[in-house]
Amino acid sequence: MTPDPDPRDSRLHAGLLGIALILGTLALLVDSSEHSEEDLESRTSAIDLAQWLHDRQPGLRVVDLRSEAEYQEYHLPQAKRFTTEEFLASPDSTGSSLIVVYGSGDGLAAVTAGKAHEAGYDQVYFLADGVGEWMAEVLRPILDTSGTLEQRAEVERVAALSRYFGGRPRFGKQTDDSAAVPLARPRRGCGI
Image 1 (cartoon, rainbow, N blue to C red):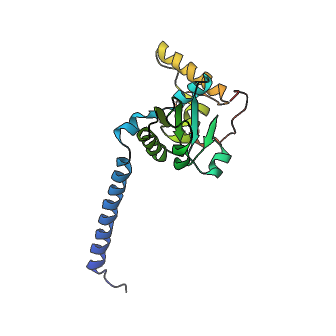
Image 2 (cartoon, rainbow, N blue to C red; image 1 turned 45 degrees about the horizontal axis):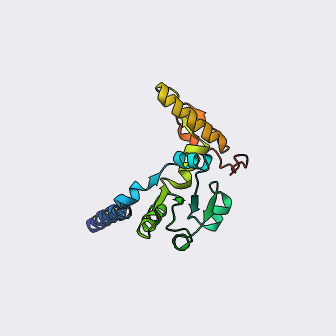
Image 3 (cartoon, helix red, strand yellow; image 1 turned 135 degrees about the vertical axis):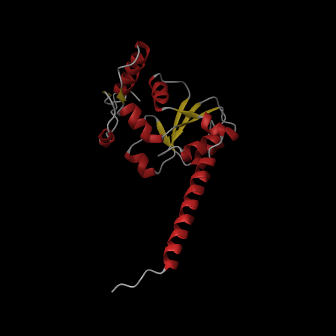
């Protein structure tokens, strides 16, 4: 025969669950509060970055804030690896360069862009969702051609940029398995 559950155990479990929910909510609030309004205004998209790289934008610097191992595995064209501290101390910090910083996501890059603005950088942006956005929007975009003539022209522009960087644009609706395409090394044919 099994003993009856102690009512104190269920109250303890409920209390611990409540504390866990509160702590989880606080963690989300703290994480989102790291980004100031100015940080969020400093976002750029992978498509904008791809266009700047394609056009060989004068003074463009691309800064990878990820680990050395991640950088060696894959990095965006023209990217140089720095820690936040190294980047902020690097030459040309307050010059008129157009700078895009990125990481694995947007947290560290957003904070770094904010610190760079405070340090006097003129044009510093962060890649909205880091390397993941570059993969999804430039190397493996899924493009919908069912829009207006203007929207279809934009789809063709994005498809051409994707091909330029060795990407494989697909036309149609996104499916859950579309993100499972393996990471490919960038081709060197784009001249970057």
